[in-house]
Length: 149
Image 1 (cartoon, rainbow, N blue to C red):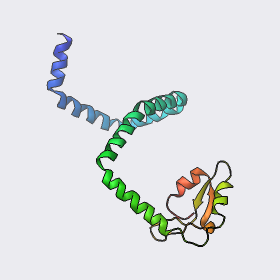
Image 2 (image 1 turned 90 degrees about the vertical axis):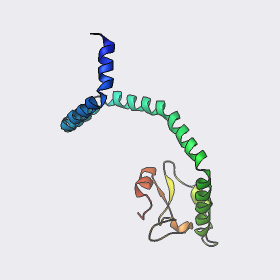
Image 3 (image 1 turned 120 degrees about the horizontal axis):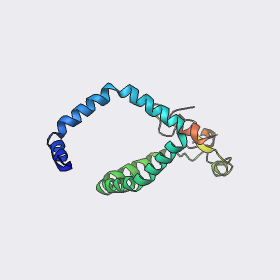
Image 4 (image 1 turned 180 degrees about the vertical axis):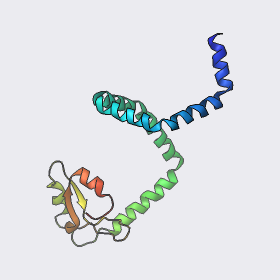
């Protein structure tokens, strides 16, 4: 029997093979995940290199798909940007603007400027004024999300 015979047989019965393969995976899922996590811990450098290689390989594809989506939904994006700029304008009053530029310029290295009360919170929305600004590390700011710290 040759290679082509097995290939044709597999293609004819592909669905059955895949369902059996899926069943075996589900039965041994915990063991597989445990093995993978142990391997990743032991081979941290190899795992990081593989992840980096994967990200680089798929970066262009991701950028192209995002660009394609943006082209197909340009009206949606335009409306979203108009709403965002309008809402931002509502949060910048005439008072409390003295010293904001200096506050941003004096931001320490490794820190970012953040609003204590978010500008577009779910329950309460803050203002873009000097007393609503604070310095946080990027990680703190990211973990904070859209809520008060």
